[in-house]
Image (tube, rainbow, N blue to C red):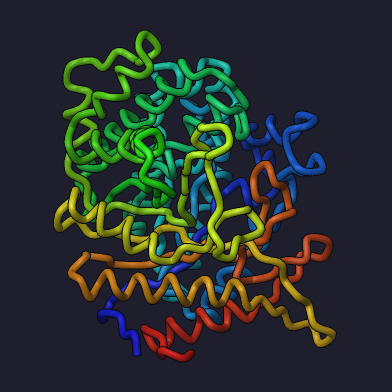
Length: 444
């Protein structure tokens, strides 16, 4: 039996634009994802988050599902333009009221709210002012966070400033795969630095508020491995790891950026003002880690170039290797850097095909096995003294999977997007049993 400590937090996670729908309802402003998904060619089949899971109207039904599953906590994100339509200044009461009702509904059902302040849906009005490239954004973000703390901070005791700043900066500003769809390395580097400063500013506002809760940030980390011992391969692995992981962990915990980044990017590297890194490295109460897969690089004997390669392991519908041991590797690495700081797995899950049986039940054995193997690695972490305090499955339910539209399903709850019918999958039933016994049997 893999038994977890008493009080271990089992939860599921979602993001506002991916599930809420009604993005412009009740006075909300448009987000960069509303614009991006409504621009031809940006998403699978031109799909948008206009309806998604209709959670904005069906949240009570969804909280009832969470209670049925036995969730101890729910990690959700708040839509910045739903609360502040122009991104700053005027508050939209109806938008803020929605999150007020959601928090109350969660608490009434014994589910702890973990609120993410920013999960990628920047107000379009702020993008028009430069978005994450504009250094003023840390102040806009701090003011937005202050609105949330004032309204919800008496009941929400766990706050996450940002979700995956690497994705916001790189996928949004460098590759253009995500909103706002820019392809500019110079912009991406500045966006990354300003995201970290915004995190710092929100932590400062929270500390000044006097609220008795906790605040942290969520970063995404892959395990990154070399498939051979060639010097060129090892150099690529180090470079990828530095850009993908050390870029964010080291300023947060060491108060410095890796020297290689400034050397590599030269004049494109942003100016770091005195005091910036000290602020970024200020203490937080926990760290969230999103883990899904690993990257492997090897030298091609035919061409001599180093490229990403695949292993013989299973791969998900996203083309991501199933590598549970990577969760242990990542958490151990972070613990060695962060010391006794509590850690949460704030996202882990997999996209796999669902099989809907004639009786309406949903079979997804690959997802069930994926979760089982990763839960075992989480237990291994705890056994080895890593301060893992909770685990949030991604995702509560199938949703709008960003540029992939509705073509990838991560949920432990199936959503029929035509009828909005929710059906707990076999993986969801498995997860519910794990929560109920706070662990899993070796053979379950």
